[in-house]
Image (tube, rainbow, N blue to C red; front, side):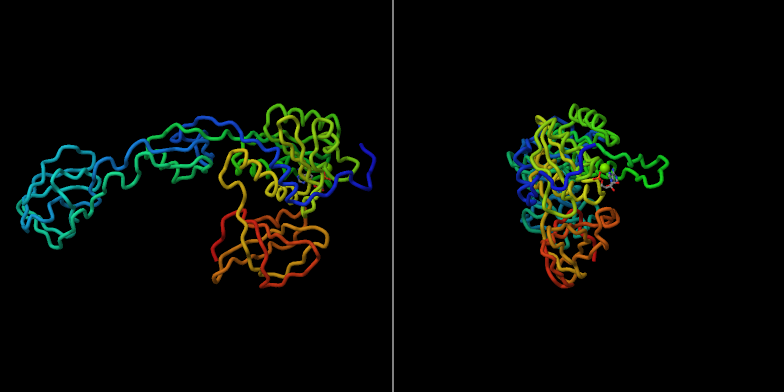
Length: 415
Ligand code: AMP
Ligand code: MG
């Protein structure tokens, strides 16, 4: 136990200063090679590309039919062409198309020599081996020209791109199955507190279930990290030191929850300053004032508050951007947008606040609806929230129709 202090020795930092300090200590993580066509658990989904990827081929490599129909010569001045053969995608051999002839051709098949257009089957008739054209095409029509989809040497994916469905498809298209991606940062998560219990164990009167660790582990995975659970440490200096050391051994980033406030059982800040350097111990914002940031050698350590909403909002504001930056993501930060309020909102007098809201597109603008009571312990205020409303300090009352900025942390919901 520690004596109960009345004044924190840590100055209260503005949010931007705290973010800048974290940024100054955030290094790009090493890369590794993966197979972009692998299935789980090594699937490329959500990984951040660690190299520029260029096309080493032209796609398509030969002119190809864009529709099912007939390849012919547009200007051969006849309306009765002899059908010489049929070619399908994947076939290479075809007779040469001379004036007065045509080749039945399927989508994706190479255009035969001599042909200068493909007519859609819907615009033709074929009787007794002769093709009759009902509506003539222009020269070049319905032909995919060489390089139309991907030019040789073109930058296909830039370093820092997150790999989603389209990107994985592109890599497969150009035959780049092995690619360099950022290693997933290993992020260890520790809960602290004598009252904190595993969610599936019986709970004593007054005890609480460990929601923070499981929520943070999920948030880490969502941010592209490899999540490591360190369990729960009692409010005992030795127990917490041991758990922190265990985390430091295996992780690039360590997150703790609880134990950073002013109580006699709040041991995290002194432990971190004993083991490394505490860069800040308080931030001027709500919820999450006691958020603490330290480094122990190369490991980033975030002492997140115990209240469930505070720990997740702090993760969003401070930890997630650092994890995305470590992976070299082109856009490590969430987008900021202007929203119109649906409800009356009261600002905190002393600190800027991140209120949880649901943002949707309605009648030509983004509107924000509050998730209800904004208490730090009320996880329900985060349920379905897709944005954090940035409410400046000063105690003002904002009315429905007023506009504020918000950080979009999830997808917009339909109106
Ligand atoms: P502390 O900062 O440790 O005093 O924690 C502040 C509040 O957050 C206390 O009411 C705790 O019970 C609660 N809390 C701490 N850790 C957790 C956790 N892992 N899951 C849910 N609530 C927690
Ligand atoms: Mg505690």
